[in-house]
Length: 404
Image (cartoon, rainbow, N blue to C red; front, side, top):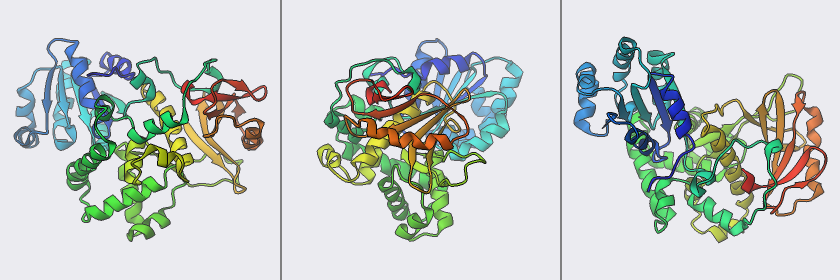
């Protein structure tokens, strides 16, 4: 069963304006399925995967001969296995001077992006894919969330249903196969990730220690990054912890939300906060296999926040928008915090996240820090389990998470 992806529109757009389209993201988020579905709509698009050892060997040892075997347009899956192809792809697209020639996928962008940028500068359109968003799962239109654009919408969400979603995550296979248990799926997923990505590209000597590291990261979801603590818990040095975290970020598994900073703000925490882009994987790694137990646990608030933040990020990424510099958070040394700030068209849109269904006017105290921010402040939102959009004052509203 194919689930329509919001990012299809951006893929179509890039194919009309760039000779090469690079689609990156973590394993099994649907990159290959997306491109195959796209190819089915146009006769003549061929597909080849470098998962096959013989094809991979040919692509590495004789890139020119490899490309001679296929007509364009061509989908090349898992391009990270043969970066030797990139200079030859550049030569071919320069000769053809035509858009939509090569469609590349890669599940290890930390290994590929420097080489893609060097070999195909100005010739490649880049897409970042994540697991399915709620809007995609439900088959409804998806738009980037901004507090000022929320609509009056009655939500029938129940907190138990949300934690069911959090536990299962949004990987296409686990969404389409309802009988597949998260524990079985993510256990297999991690084994594949360790064997095909970490072993091949990062050369981690102790895979068990790396697994312990990523589990420790999952246990700290929605928290500020503390490399010293991570390194101590896993018994590695800080430099190794920093390198391993970079691997998780670059492969699309973890997103680092940077602190909002301006030169005029002095009393601000400088460490980023970390979020998993698939909550199901975060739950598996932090050893949760029961949604009710998670909902009642001390980690419930962190997982709920992770879910909301990742859904908002997916909403922007699925439109092909750059998510790296658009989002931030604010926390000062007094512990006052805005969970998410969206920078859009010169305005700052503050968002506070609450697991409660009725946070009330007391939630306004979180927004008291806004006077410290130098930019123009737009509308704000308290994203929560409320069934309705409710104004708190002239600029801040309670908003159901259904609106994202």
